[in-house]
Each structure stands twice: as structure tokens, then as C-alpha cells.
Amino acid sequence: MTFESHEAYFDSVSAEARPRLVSIQAKVESLLPDASRCIIYRMPAFRDGRVFFYFAAFKKHVGIYPPVTRDVALITELAPYRGPKGNLSFPLDQPLPIDLIGRVAVALHDEYTRR
Image (cartoon, rainbow, N blue to C red; front, side):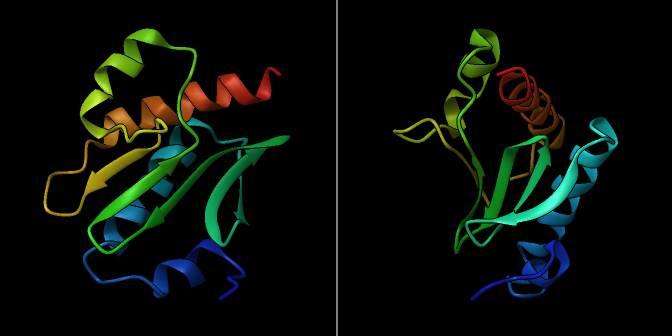
């Protein structure tokens, strides 16, 4: 399924995941107001010149991509959420660490827009 907007994607996910995605979107936009919304790989994403942040809902978690690779302290803090490839997985049955996710967005923005 192809989506035309973040909202169209949000409408396609579970009622449990939807408010989490809306919170993530709002956090990224509050911290990085020059970033623009887009859909890449059938997922909501943000770009500022380059795409730097993707997020999506799954059956039991919300995922954030790509992995943070340069901020060692942040990588260590993200350890409980990191998968084998470094992508982040936030279980739907646990509180969403929105401030931590905001820091991830800023770190990814810095990594990808400075290349």
C-alpha cells in the first residue's frame, strides 16, 4: 500500500499505535522546524535536504530508522531499544520515551545533513 501523507499512513495503523506516531511526528517538528514530511519506503519520514528519520508502526512496536552511529553516549542510552542492526524498537506495551526519541531525531539530522 502506498501512502500520500503521514496522516494517511497513521489512519492505516492500529488505534494503539496511532497516538505514538502522532507524538513522534510532533516532537520531530518541534525540534527541527525546517524538516519536511515525506513518505519513503512506504513509511513516514522527515527530510532536510536528505531523508534522515523514518518511523513506522508494527504489530507490537514502533520502529525508528536508521540507527544512530556517531553519538556514543546516545547509542549507549538506546541499548535497551536497539535491534541487531541498530534500528530502534519501542514496544507498544511500554511508555514511549518521547524526549529520547527527540534526541535521536536531532542526532540523525546532524549525521545525515552534514554529509
